[in-house]
Image (tube, rainbow, N blue to C red; front, side, top):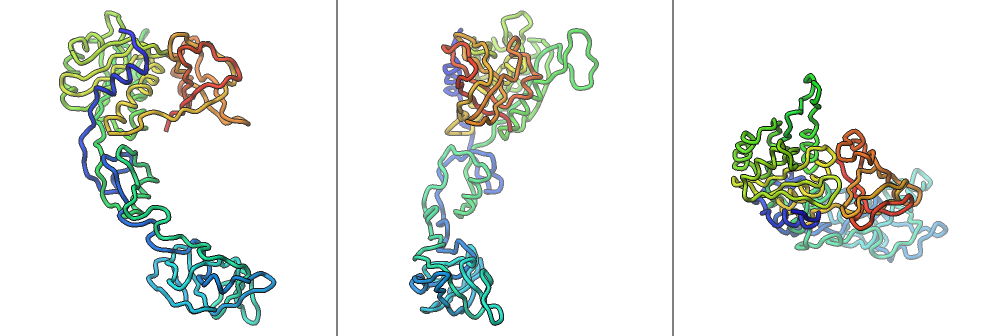
Length: 417
């Protein structure tokens, strides 16, 4: 059957189910996906605190302060970061305070040390710390250089939604909000299987018709960029009977199987032939270039099969359009797509009328925005593994658009770790 990229992806996503949920300590949850909403256990910040190294004081005391008419205040103490002290500050007084230290209850502002003079011997030095007294050279209003309790996130406020990824910055936010454990989705157990009797491993002698096998490295690496380590990586010869048995076995002990090669209509396209025994798997022609031939569906054992073309660029493009969003959806991710940007074509190229063209490109920063240029020879995109290795994005040329002229804008996505 024939279908579009959008329809095939929607069919795959509709056939998937989220993986089980588990509870993990915060430090072990990096890269996973939240299974439920998380709210702050405490406010961020926890208390009013200083945003500067300087002096905590009453703003009214320095309302008329300037370099020409400094205001001298008596120093009565110090509040370092981490201190629980709350020293009293009477009118005409101040205390030294460090960044992040709690603001004393009698203070309503902080003046930075750079806007003061400290006493040194018989004179006053700009920006110098002082013990007995300080001269303030600049007026500050109430609230100046003060971080208010809960101004970032109030206690009980939502800090992350279900389906959100957990990169380092979000984990730091959760830690600051007092969260200790998270309920997250399991990562999928994925097996990679590269098929083809012509394939040989690194260092093996090559006879006529044989080629170095690279797809297993490609797919395992793309999985790793998603935070997933393949549980097993295999190579398989073109034996449909043996492969059918392998798919039955793998279907019972993993969540997904990603194969490359053998999906065409030929007599030796063993993945398609073996998958014909699996009623939950369908073979389709997708209106895209490269990667037109696809097989996907649920194996009888329960795992989901993604059978991708064998040409390396076709396999990479198919992974990007179908496998990546599916594996994210299995983890409960709310957004499974890439951010699309607009880049100007630094040179023109032939399109693929009637099909979505997914062209490996090199995206760079130009003087007035992003530029893109094909990374591969357009006479043979699907097998151009050498040029594809230098690409950092894909141009997505709509089926109805046709050729791209130099200087035209084109949608791109950025890929890679």
